[in-house]
Length: 275
Image (cartoon, rainbow, N blue to C red; front, side, top):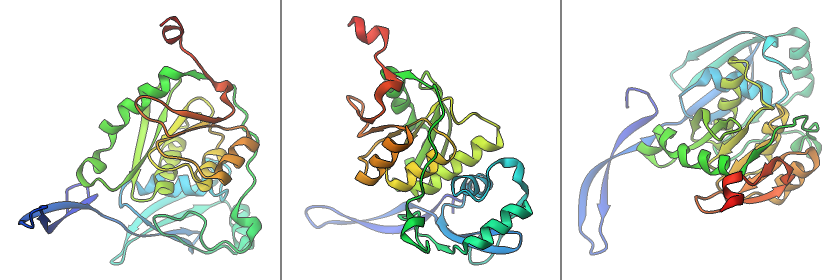
């Protein structure tokens, strides 16, 4: 395992087109079961990268509506176990009572963010309207996309993890987090921002995955006004972004991107207008 714990060495054989096999060693991404425990009761077990778990605990709690604010989290400790890790959190009693009433038990995998809900209504949570006057220009999106690969340290080693990054109005990336799960990466970003008391309304997120409905739900839950996705959206995610007032940008590449909802937050820069 590497010093960071994010990847391990694995012996492999590289097979050429002519059938010649060459022994090699590859770095593969680590993932482990991570239990989110509230006031001594396990609520969810997710498969996640063993990095930034403090961020994950707080971010998951906020994005899933377990907590409304960081102040409702009284204590957090990451406890390593033989089988994985526990994120043990002490939360406000009224929030814990609400959590017990929901009787929700998640067993998540890297590709799923809403497994284990009890009803169809629970699967697609309504998002509150985005209350943000944030706006930026086309150049900021391209600037953010250009920076992101350099900040994906684990992905450079393994080519198999997602990233979520937070950008200011100029497109400068302020924070980035990585994980084997796309929704975990976003939760870690949300948690990292919350620990720092950053304003979710004053910037935009860039994600390296498709913009699926749980990604929109999580971003909307904390009031992010815009999400830029490297890949395509789903129709359900598109409808949710439209209904809550989020600007959705998808298929973002070095030469173009697509704006699907609420384009008023994106304007052409003066330099682009003059060219």
